[in-house]
Image (cartoon, rainbow, N blue to C red; front, top):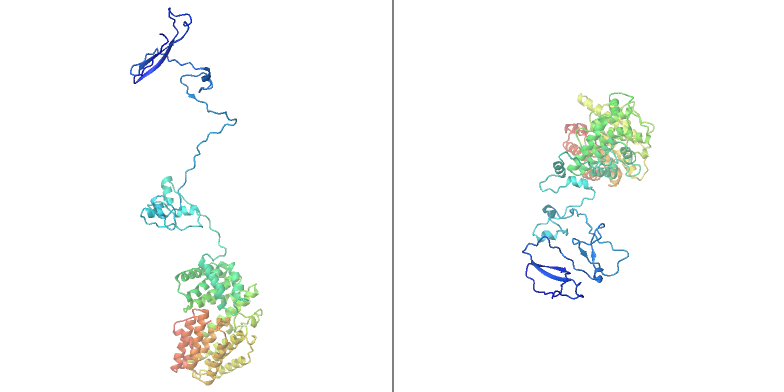
Length: 574
């Protein structure tokens, strides 16, 4: 039969081909003449097919053609054996087709900078558990914790200071190696100083200490009307040299309380800066050389007095105050300030220290001892003075007593007898009469009134110890007891403590009686506790030396200027 097809198992490695023919057999009927004939041929893959074999495609029915879709290019609509067949998805086509999902590439995550020190050095992932990460604990590694956060540093600053290289090379060296050229990192510009001279936290501490402590122990006024706060401090804000002087003064006061190396180093820095400002002041150099046309600014004049106070606070005993006092004396005599308030304070402050300097020094003569010197008319009222003894006239008597002492010493050196001649005695009686008629201008029942009376009492003791022999006497004992009475009336925390060193010194140099001395020593301790000035301990040492000479019957115990000079000391008792 020509139309019979026999299927059998195909051998392995064979392929099947389908062929068809439309030949008619002579013995076939008319109806079967046009019927196609199919044959199946199995060909082994081991055999090489001939080149004349043409593959045949099986015909599809009409209902199957619609279910097949051919992939073709725009210019080739006909199917080809090389085209792939893609089956149409089921369901109705969408009016708005869904955009196929595309993969989103995430940017690579940078290295974390917040891991623990150990993990960052080992270049391991850190779980950042505080205080010690679990990763280090699981690996039995000591966790070194986390570096402190630096809130006030930019990334560039941390990059310059930090390093991730185990070899110890900084970031600059690494970049230089990579780039092959010098790499420089520009540090951010610093803000300018708000106040010239106040540069560090320690400087700000010095400034606070000056405002709240030092200014109170240098004047009768604590807060209101205090010239150090209301005149000098505002002036120093606008003048770098004066600010360095004030900070140096404050640092010296702190060093006298506590031997702190940082305090010593910083106050010495300010001292050198203040001196450099004075050296480079051209007008100052011209004025010192004798040029009367040179105009010195008020802050520069104030610097000389502040540096003199610095010597007092530091307890210097080698005459370090002298150049500052000499410069201030020259400026006061040659310069006139347009600021009357400052000029009044300047005169009072200088004359106070200048007059008391003559009490303890052999070769220092006060300006009050000059015949042509008079207090200026613009001086403030005595009741409003920042110090005592100047504008109320008492220091004028002290200067006259100092002249008597110089005359007595001169007669002693010339071996003249008696040491106190009639002229000296007559001048002393005039001073005594002046002290008896002196009237205190301070309000009664106030610490200032009591302190003024103590000043008068000690001035009289100064006169007594100069004129009369150095032996105990009832009048001298009563006068010392009266002075101690005034001293007891002054509160231990009163601002009057700032001006008690001089009267306490004169009281001590007149105390022949042993029972009077413990109270004087206690007053020295209280004064040192209050002001903590460095010159107090040396003043007390001089008084104790005078007591030793008194007890030995030495008649030269009245000449404490020579006693201080023999000790090799030269300091201010103010």
